[in-house]
Amino acid sequence: MHNAKDITVENDDDFVLIRFTRISDSQINKQKFTYRIKERINPVYELLKSQKRTGDIKIPITYVQAERVAWRILKRWVDTQLAFIETGMIKFEEVFLSYIVDENTGMNPIEKHNKEQLFRNKWGHNLSAMSILEHFTPPVRSVGATLPV
Image 1 (cartoon, one colour):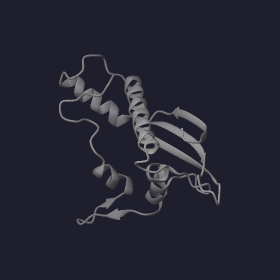
Image 2 (spheres, rainbow, N blue to C red):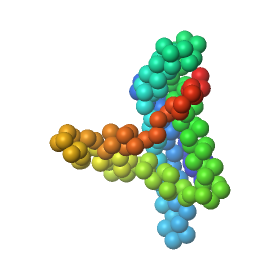
Image 3 (cartoon, one colour):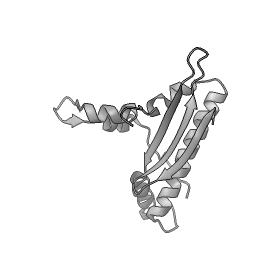
């Protein structure tokens, strides 16, 4: 994966996770960086249950099935980003910078920001950076499409 080393994939009850290290492309300062992409399983599970209720999918839905679908979505997302990088349409850092892990805190920039600061919306409610990003993230399901199971 574009000079990636030490690629690990894992999961816990709530997340699927890909972690890898990569040496920077800089000719001046070759540094080793760790990246972590962590995605929640529960939203996939809830969407699959909803699709089951509406008849969009017929197979039984379990949390284990949702975990497999979440892995597949994450893999396809990474594959798509790597295709953009290979074609030169974007640079590696443009895609993966927000997933870089700070050696001192063990967190990526979004996790660090969530821990240190909260945003306030115009009504005075606290919004974490992650909830703001989720608001602007395109929906997983497009009109008439179902998740692959």
